[in-house]
Image (cartoon, rainbow over all chains, first blue to last red; front, side):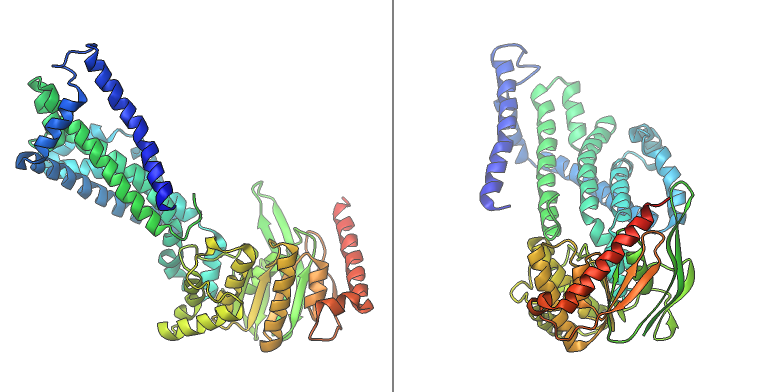
Length: 255
Length: 258
């Protein structure tokens, strides 16, 4: 994609968001909702800009980001590892498949009370919850990507002298990268949601905690600031992943 | 020398029925010979090639190369597939270097060799392109260079020009013959084009429709090096083509009988 097409894509992407903000502004300007409950966007963004400069707010963002990255990274490592192993070995697959079938549809947040008791109120319980939720899309897309590698790619590598046990890393893994990255993208969005949720349920810091604290004291503006922040973070992280994706997939046909 | 000794291949289909793809094939291919396997689609000709490649093991019988039973793929037998099967994450140079690097050739040496091969197949200047940026004919040239790079004694070509347009196919046939005249590798070439088989080969093996059996082996006694323009006017060439086409028609009718 060339620079101009990219720019026009970004511009096109901004329009619906600008419209949403305009509707939001309209609702409070025309008095459909009291300003104390739904503050206008200008007020929220001003507060966000002020907050960004304070060290307490930076600390909240850092906590949330740390949990998000730690959980997401664990999910990527486990998901790709288990997914590849299941695709490569029928024995591993026979063990993993029923477990995944049982655990994947389970709402992971239901495990959170148990995680809190086991791991405490600090980072560990939240990181575990994020990892547990982001794991399955990554695992499944890795498994399917690795299972559907074109047979003739593998044959070509074997004929060139690649031993069977190296095929997994020399052919299957690189060929499955497009599918793995699709799983990661879903996993990243889930990570953003879940880290916020976990912090809302029980935490002493982080963006989710900020929201709950503000809501309990009816500080509507402060309630919207963490919301906007997490969606901006999601946007930035997704953009970074997209950049990584177009670098890693530069040889692959456009999907 | 490649010996295919009473090879049969049965596939289990979904309905647990056994499908006999190849039935009792015996064939000997001399070193340096260009042999085509010709037959209607579904006659198991590609399967026979995969058995020689070691990608598929026969249900019955044995295939041997230089007297040793084939138990798996090896760099002495290099495949070229209709689907090209290039590594999409590697550049042209990366694809061609793959084999030599796997063979333990040092990076600098492998690169120099690969650059020479890329030039030989007419793709100088495209070293850093990715396969998706190339046309079908160019992709197949890269695939051929990638296989030649690890110096296989036998080339196993599975309808390599089947996905290309007529003009590109003709050019690649000529180039393949030029390369073959120079280093006289053994070539096992699967095709469904009578024309292509006669033009390229020393020997054409005609197969019947499923289950694949050898119907006839025809020696093509046409002078080499072969020039397409001369050959098309040669009555002997025309006779081979007509004769083999008639044979294929017969095998198709066999297939239709209950």
